[in-house]
Image 1 (tube, rainbow, N blue to C red):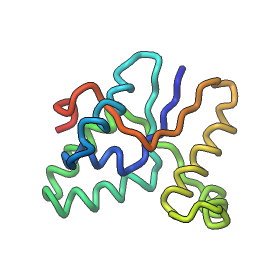
Image 2 (cartoon, rainbow, N blue to C red):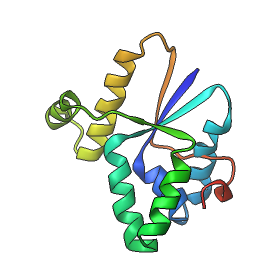
Image 3 (cartoon, rainbow, N blue to C red):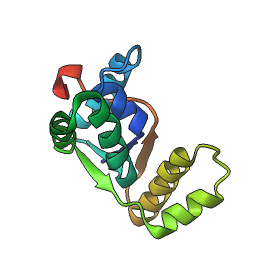
Image 4 (tube, rainbow, N blue to C red):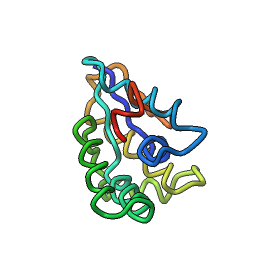
Amino acid sequence: MRIVLFDSDVLLDVLAQRQPFVVVSAQALNMVTQPQVQGYISGHAVTNIFYILRRQVGSEVARELLSRLLQRLQVANVTDAVIRAALQSCIVDFEDAVTSDTNSQFAIRNSQLKNLDVARILGFTSVSDFS
């Protein structure tokens, strides 16, 4: 099984149809339509994505988009240890540090999985899958 943890910017590219990134991001997100791939989103990213989408499309549409997204992705836990590690990280962007440390915690808990990918790339077969 291949595990992919998606960055919120990749998901927002698809959900908000952000140009010029939407096509590449949709291609990456589409990886999770393959049976051997499981996609994840960091827990903190769900609320950030909702906040941004709500301002653009309203609360009801934002909830619907996230619901559809979560039909394909599972939520990776952001724990106390993840936040503390991110605060000490050399990664300048705090959200990126949290995502990276979420991935690290996930990899430790799931060490039997051989192919762990962190994607700041994008992802689904077609943009219409999520819009």
